Amino acid sequence: MTRLYTGKLSARASLLLTLALIGLSMTASFSWAAGPQPWEIGMQPPATPVKDELSAFHDHILMPIIAVITIFVLGLLIWVIWRFNHRRHPVPTRTSHNTIIEMLWTVVPVLILVIIAIPSFKLMYYMDRVPNPDMTIKVTGHQWYWTYEYPDQAGLTFDSNLIPEADLKPGQKRLLDVDNPLVVPVDTVIRVYVTGTDVIHSWFIPSFGVQEYAVIGRLNESWMKVEHPGVYYGQCNQICGINHAFMPIKIEAVSKDDFQRWLGDAKKKFAHHEEGGDTVRVAASVATGPDRPQSAGN
Ligand SMILES: [Cu+2]
Image: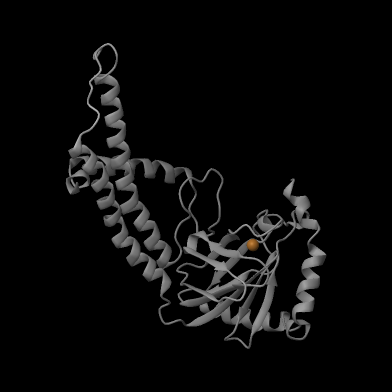
């Protein structure tokens, strides 16, 4: 079985695959403003070590195996159609069982899965363990917005709401831009706590390889280390109610100096939160709620 994807076939499949990927990548525009692009087929460019690993796992392990299996099955189909059609093979064979082939088609897929499982588990543990964090961010999912909290920064807290379509300024992305993006420094290991207050949400940023459930009464943990300054978009990807599509995630990754500057401004801007507490947030969400379903139809 190992011969299956170490031989010449694999080399040719990889070459074909590489050519196809180059072709695809030429149609997409790459930049660190990572978000969905028109006509995008592949994944968003990676911006964290975790996503680097995820992309490598997909491109170098999964895709070659998928390519070899697909070509093998297609070849078998073509051969069967050509060799056993009615004209070439008028009297059907009465063969119904073949022990060796039956064992092979059970054992070979199991072995392939085991081979995939080894790097897959390694990667899962890498994603799961937070390496010595430099700072912490707490993300809380609500119906239907996010609250971001910086526990290391005297509890700096603010809400992040979708900008309704009618209020979009030129250059802002529909259903992706928010009033208060999460701002993070680059080259910093950030531990992310994710929780929820009403139903289950999920904090998902494709280019970071971060996807964490926001569950009521539970603190889930993830981490990210953004490698390039830029703007990154994500979405809640757990169906969470009528406005599920209207609680996007926008993250601005800035240099460490810019982050300190932003912290100074943000502490002044969001100071009211400490007195207002939950009443302010609930009132704000109710007030902005009815606008949102309308933009769904546009
Ligand atoms: Cu949600």
